[in-house]
Every structure is written in structure tokens, then in C-alpha cells.
Image (cartoon, rainbow, N blue to C red; front, side, top):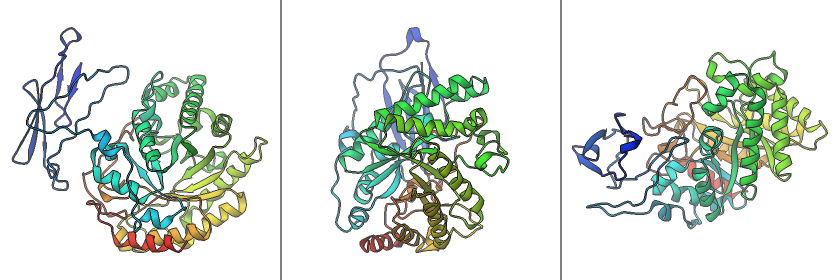
Length: 442
């Protein structure tokens, strides 16, 4: 067995024959450094960050992880010189919706955000602001293949179930994310691809879809079934993602099965839950220079929906990330043109799914402008990729891996970026009030 610190990566190991059954944990804070001791042995330290005051509230959140296939049982938890709180009962609860907030302004219009259980369970402000302001959430990490299906015989439903419970308690709709993606793939699935065990690989994906759509049939009625499947390779039918410059960015699904795997996935969702909506979620298609990619999506949607299986694709999500610091964010004019094109040529729904803006304060009004487009075109929903800069996707570098296995969890706090409608202290920015004004006019 082993126990690894969150800092300095020092590991204490024991043989299974003499594995301690009782651990004594001591946390010592001195000179803005937290030291962790296990059974009197120093495991590691965590220094105060210049960006985040980790000792501000004098609270320490305790959690424990186990490797897939392993595990342990915590029979008791005691503390000396400290008061023990139950984060579950404090946070997974119903919050009141203020009448002057974003959610109340939107009324029946679905206004959404990406949500992550790690932030929810460790930061009470996060849950409060989330429930007060949003009527829809897109799980940021907790439903992804790597997170929820870590090995071939195990599912890790804990995080997804808790996020679902929080949403249910607060009357929040869940937009399922995601069933088929070329990233966030667990090692055991990647190994099937590398060994050319394609029959097993196909079955693994179908089993994964079946399990998730069945388990959450009563709580999730729409899924990002296909996420970022389109690329820039004109040699591939519909311009689908296949080979990329970096090996970890290939689509093992397309390389193993071609575009048919996507049809199989769409059909599987409808087979399990005929009332569920299949969405294609894609980035960059609100940019003027992405006309070819958009036309490929339109061609794919029309192809899938005319195969004779009924409507397989119900909507197209426009991520609308604005990540490029040397390029102006996509304008609302470009977004409106692209969305209207999809609506007119496919008759499926559209939504903004993952909006955030690099240097958002320098582009005041962009969130509101894109919400206005959504209103004019009767979007199914308007979603942002987070709401506070404390947990924004631009606020830290992504982890990297050689096997496409690089989205286990965010690494928040390395640096805060100005990309969302609340700052790192959950204070609303001017864009927040602009959105409220726009929602009240719906």
C-alpha cells in the first residue's frame, strides 16, 4: 500500500503484510507553509501561493483516493484541536435563488455553466454561486470516460452521482458531457487500440454509452454524444478528425472504425433512451475562417438524419471558446451567421456550449452580444465554460500525456486569467449585470 502527499510527491510505502490499519495525520502550519505528517513521518509540504490564500478560512478539506482495482475503508475520523465539519451536508443541499441574480433573470431560459465536483466539495462559495445563478450545468470532468470508467470492470460513479444529486436538489438541468471524445481516454481503452483489438474496443465504447445513458436516464435527457470529432483533414469524409501533428491528439475512434463509429454511438443512445437528445459539440465553428468545418458538420448531420433511423442528431453546440490572444474573439455577427446556417440547412437545434473569453474585460459586451444572438435564434441554451476565474479553464496549463490521457482534472490556482463573468473572489464583473439585463428582456 502507499500514501502520497499532495505536495513534494514523497511516498510512504508498506508491504501488504504489515500495512498499518490506523494512520495518524498531523497538519502543521508555520510561516505560511503547511506540513503533512503521517504516523510522525513527514510526507510533504505545501507553500502559500502568491495567487491563492490557502489558509484564509482556517479550514482544511480532507479527501482520499484509491487506485483502480485497489481500495480501503475509513472506519473512523477524529481530530484534535479542530472542529470537524461534514462537507457533504454543508454543500450538497438546496440553495435559495435570489431574485436579482442571473438565474432568476433568465426564468425559463436555460443558462448554463461547466461544473466540477472537486470545486463544489472544497469551496462553499462555488456551490452557492452555482445554484443561485445557473439553471443548467455541463459536467466539466466527472462524466468523461477517463474519470468515470477508469478500468474495464469498474465505474467510478461517486463524483457524477454527487453532482447529479446537487443538480436535482437545486432544480438544475444537466447537459451530459461527453460520450465520445478523442481525449480523456483511460489507459485500458488506449491499450486496446494500440493492440489492434478493435472488436473489444468497439464493445468497450458501446458498453460505456449503454451504462451512462441507462444510469442517468431519469436525470439527463441530452448528451454531447460526439465531442470535437471534426478536424482539418480534407482527405477524410466529412473532414473528420483522424491524424494530428501530435500523436495524443489523434482520434482512436475514427482511425479504428471510420465515421461509422459515430453513427453507432448516436444509434446506441437512441436505442437506450429514445427521448434523449444527441448533440454534436464542436469548437471554432463560430469563426469566419471555419466555413469549411461548418459545412462538414452540416453534411454529416444531414447524412446521419437521413439514414432511415429517425433523427439521430438533435443539435449542434457551438463551444465559442475565445483562446487566441493575438486574434480578436469571434464576433456575434459571425456566430449568428454560422448558427443560422446550421438551423436553415439541417433543422436541428443550436446552443452556445462553452463560452469563455481571453482578456474578457477588454471585450466588454461580448458575452451579452452572444446571448443576444441566442435569443434571436431561439437557442436551446446558453452555456459558459465555468463562471469564476478561480476555476476557469484559462487559469492554468493543462496536464500533458503521451497517450491522450491529459484531462484527469484541472490544475487550478497556478495563475488566474480574466475569462469569465465572476473574478477569482466570486465578485461579479460588469459583464454579469449586462447578461442579467439581456435575460430580463427575453
